[in-house]
Length: 218
Image (cartoon, rainbow, N blue to C red; front, side):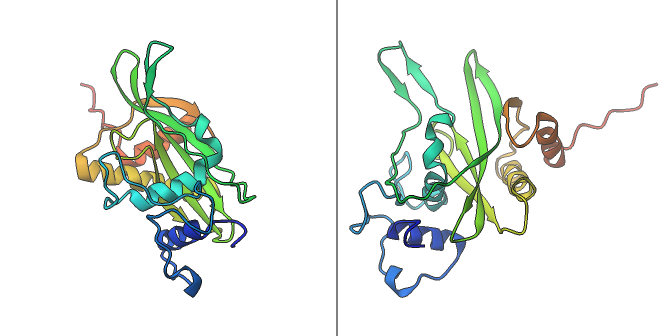
């Protein structure tokens, strides 16, 4: 596993998966740059408010490892005049360990259109982590405005389940948590299909936001 992940990444991944750290990782500080690896090794970083104490700090670091190769394909918010502007997503280069993680795009949805040309996209991927033999499901927004980070790992499952099968329970559970915590309404529509079709994604949503019952006609 040493050849696949930097020491700080091994430590934070073990913490995320709930695995004990071996002796050589016991003293690794996942908040600090790894002195044994390039400065580009992923570590836990502050959210948009400057805090590392939130629930998404560790899941964000895991998601950045998972999605490092496809950052340019993730949702991106931009405001500007074509020459000067502000981007919502910060692209972060990860050092090369020779490991090629291959995120599988499930689908990208739009939570809502809050104004002309102003949407709230979220892309879902599932990535297999060799060495840990686990799949990680991630949710990616176009800016850190809602969650404090653009990307979050929202759950994981073992190799006994197929990627889409395992991802379904995690994604729908993630949606249910939002319904319970903040009365989140159903998303509006899909921007892009991936391994999950528009029809199947809507079936997942139906399991969370049951379609309204239509009354009998007179």
